[in-house]
Length: 358
Image 1 (cartoon, helix red, strand yellow):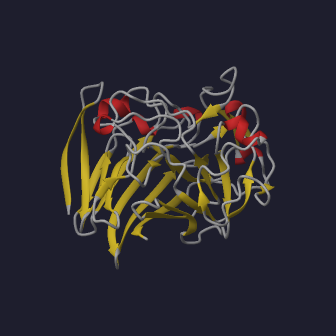
Image 2: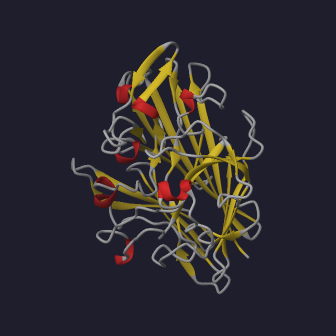
């Protein structure tokens, strides 16, 4: 079942709408502003439901500064790009410079006018309990070539006792371009207003991770997680090793790194990447992805007390993001998997959020 309701008006005076997907006792709320994941409500072992996604109460929060990019669709280029340069077909294109000590790098394409701050068209499929959002970018927009059409579909289904939210992202273009989309939802399985996520028990299917420079751009190396705080192959509390005196943790004030998820193959279906469980409620989230990696961010810079949901206050570590993606800055590392979108070769990514109780 899908219900549509108003979420307020954008600064330009356009109405934004919420689409609530319901199945059993589970509810997923998405918005046409930013193709944003607003909330996921599902019950723990005691039957009490909680919203486990951080965010705002109205579109005004998402349209404002929203430096955390809560729940938004990020693209066409997610994460950090060195020197804001994207080489394509022998030509170097330039994204907006918006990150780094002298704003020489790029983060998430455009933090002020990016995909997460645009009103998308919406199409509802009641039979599939799905909503598809779409938007277009003209040739040269954000500094990249190609007239591009992007779409994001959210679909909710039951699978036995579990609920499955599938998120599909795609892009078509009339010229070779670069696309590396992600979703920037933050989760706290104890409830979005429950404070620290340090006690969540997390495992990640990754033998390697990407270290970052002082300016948070990928160093260009791929390092093993073995013997480091980045080893999540066996379940452990998310905060167990986060305060270790490790150069990578110190640079990022916690986890803010891409993990190389096992088993990537171009064109393959979703594979398991992460499991997170709240020991108190039993709420469990499994994330499956099709991209080579996913970026774990433990909300190290969160600082939001105004306009967030239910009057909550978000501080560092109030939620964690796990952002499926091609490796950050892969355009400058030819030996890494590449995400080139071209006529006849559309970009496509699938993220599966499986909700269960353990």
